[in-house]
Image 1 (tube, rainbow, N blue to C red):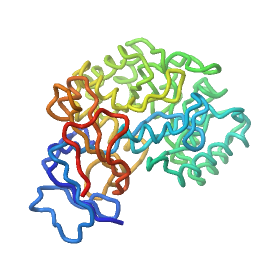
Image 2 (cartoon, rainbow, N blue to C red):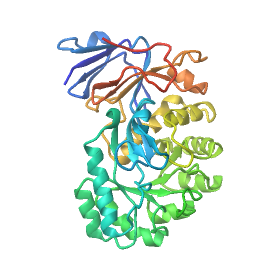
Image 3 (cartoon, rainbow, N blue to C red):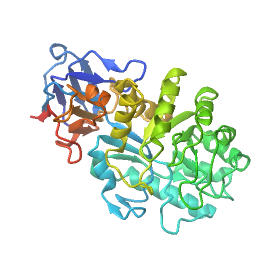
Image 4 (cartoon, rainbow, N blue to C red):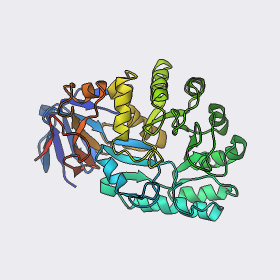
Length: 386
């Protein structure tokens, strides 16, 4: 693998909400991971194969979409759209996490079929990276008849996630709790739908139900797309240690409330950002970027912290190595700047103004997979791969 040196960085966003900015202008990538962070004079040039001139732009960890609904491959039957994951990659998303392959035509609902779909999707995406994006696929939808041995089998086959509880026939906390315990015993992260119904067959889920079920994540706390009350959002934030997810395909007013409430409650380390696509709302390639911009501009969240909500927080929630700029972390990186015409002088001030940054270069595991985004506006200062 190539050894890559990225120089002339203007701002380094860490992905860590407790220390969102790093004092550095140079990154060294070796064997797919970050090998050094610092000043150019302190980072060696020896054996560098690829040199990237950032030209003063910002580097962030690759964004992690905490809420996607893929099926298999890079096609969504929900919107009859091909290449939607690759398109999201061009918005700076280097990892997407399945919240359930619920849109599969004829989705099986018996235990054998449920297991088969989850295992197939997990193994398929383990070997397939659309455009270079990593996909954590195979989120099992809970259906009646699953037993503890099924969760052991799925976990051994690479299934890491329980999809949104509420999308299958298992909806009530009393019915879900024992399956949640089996899933957690086998190292799975458990997601639960929160809010009004999203698709035919789903159900309205309250904050009390999310907490009673023992879920790790309150999916789309701002609505998917219909939101619960502010009091319920506040209860999840203030009365639990559950991760609270804010999505693009949700209620924008509640997104602002949830963000402000989390910051005020000292719960910034528990906020995630997702797209929740494909859904009836559509597929928005820049959905995660837009949520960051909305929260930075309308809720006045520090944009570097908001980026941490879409990177390091999600990685920690799901036990992923990526999502941060730190020595030894996978070199999933996005080089971006204020878009041409923005009042912002750099990526972070553009986000404060409500503009999505212009993305130039994207790396996944140290490999350059994008040299100019086809979806964002052009960056004022575009990084150059030498």
